[in-house]
Image (cartoon, rainbow, N blue to C red; front, side):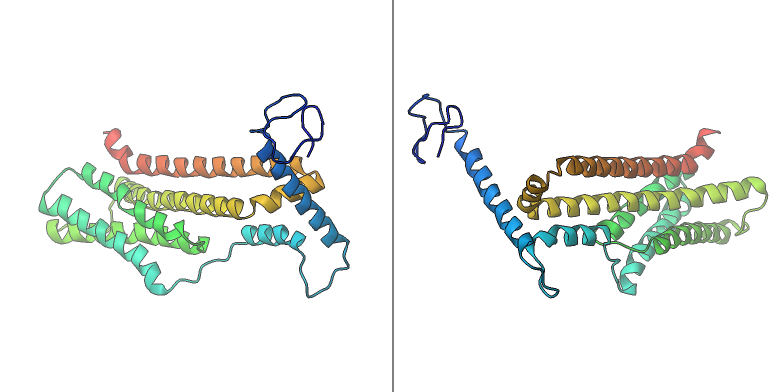
Length: 263
């Protein structure tokens, strides 16, 4: 090997250059890594030079396939029981919390509003944290959960106090929809956070598995700028998802508590 400082030829096992007396202890691992990458690049170039066969995939094609699979993540086919668990359990807990807070203990309804914001959070997060789900179905779950929960609470109140199940007057209808909206937005914001966690975990797994090959391809093709652009795009995507989650959470809290703040 040659000394990286004075370019003198030295022993491969040497830790100090015999000519310029420079320390090679920290430089040798980097030189070994560069040599290994150069061999990988040479192998890839030889594979590209060979005539391609329709039934055979070269090693150089692996990153493109991985990227396409990452961009087109399949939607999970989940049993109906799983959907019902993540929909029925928060619904049952919301109704039970209403019964305990307003009927059994006769507490201030402000406690009910706060608990109603917290109950849907873990279920929405767990629903999408592991696998991709159909968006329209998730939206339908959030809307139906909030609507049925508020209707059931109104029904329980009607049986206890003898009031109407459905609201009467513009003010009661507005409070009805604000309460339902706060539950739906809380459920939605937790889904967004779960999706962000899933995508981040998948990106880290892909990065760990294909780091060496991706670096070799960048060196061979001179695409360092492409990696920077992709990294910036990922950061903007994460930032946008974070802003969306924060916005839905803030809207959920505002919709659920503004009636008490304005009083």
